[in-house]
Length: 421
RNA sequence: GUGGGCGUAGCUCAAUAGGUAGAGCACUUGACUGUGGCUCAAGUGGUUGGGGGUUCAAGUCCCCUCGUCCACCCCA
Image (cartoon, rainbow, N blue to C red; front, top):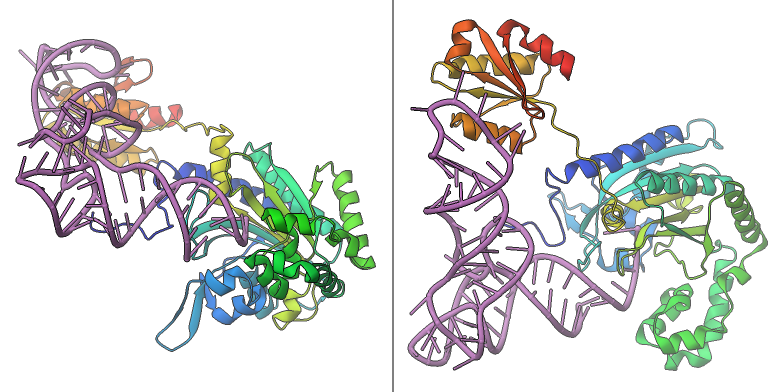
């Protein structure tokens, strides 16, 4: 094979496209209902945007970005995550307008690129559907984002999705929590794994969810994130849970949910679905109150979600969700003789011009082969043109389902099919 | 980035201890000279992922490489 797709990418083939369109349409429709407007940003951004927004020490920035220089020496990076570009566009085009309190609600469906070792449900180019609500600090908005996500999963037939909920604190209480964890860990540091020794310096909160057995033992009596929240964060978390209860949205509080992007504050959540192996998170998000200011805007609270479409489709498959195949509602024009061929081409064009999907066999094979092909391809009707039909100015219209056929004047074919379709 | 499994026809898979690659489905044609689905028959189709090595002989053994899958890590 001369060329193959780049590692970790995949083609979405014609047979799979309907499933994608179905998922995308469901997301769009829900965003319409929830009043989120679509935004489309470039596939690449200035590298600095992701570095500043996501955080220098995150895995995404440290080793997973597709970065290169253009001919003008500018460092550019393929969309490494969905939120930062939206925030950039929001600020650059002043979407908040004159009202600093305005709630701006945006959604996107876009490819995301991360250089990582591929495995099932993990690709170097994948697609995310995301929603961002910018301008409100109210926990009810967190709940709305979650509700929108859950509604999306429900529409796609995924009813085994679990919502994991946590609060990661804010710039006020997080340094204190981090300090408390460092103090707690310090005496045991040399017993812990290499990763944790690194985390101790770079991201102490991550110490809480190491999978190493020894580290877990050590961390067992450590103070939980949730116990160390400041009053404001604790109240926000309480209110969010009350709202979710009110809306009948089930959740599990899981203090191990720590988002891998530095900009998250307060609410962090993740959606987990069965059947995906180790990559069981089909979506996640949270509140990112400091990000807009960090990107040069006024202090503006915000919350958002990102959903991995490949993973959603895999979850659908393993949940046995089958999408009904839409029958092909078209006409296959069958020509039998040399003389019928040009007439067939004219008929084909007339049908298409009248809005009726139509196809013909350019190989001009036997009528048997043509009908077999029309059947295999699922055409509902066959319009047969041969010597007899040419003489009588008729066409034989065959119903491929019932096998019945009738002779009708060529001039009536389109009206007849339009009525049927 | 670390460790492991797997790459044979379009698809799903065979090939005994190295011995010259096969089946089902699909596709094409015919039985049916103007009629699909069922049946029967014939046929097309492979540089066994790629490269190198060992051997008289490699799908099979060894090395490299690419891809894929699984776990770690991380995340969607």
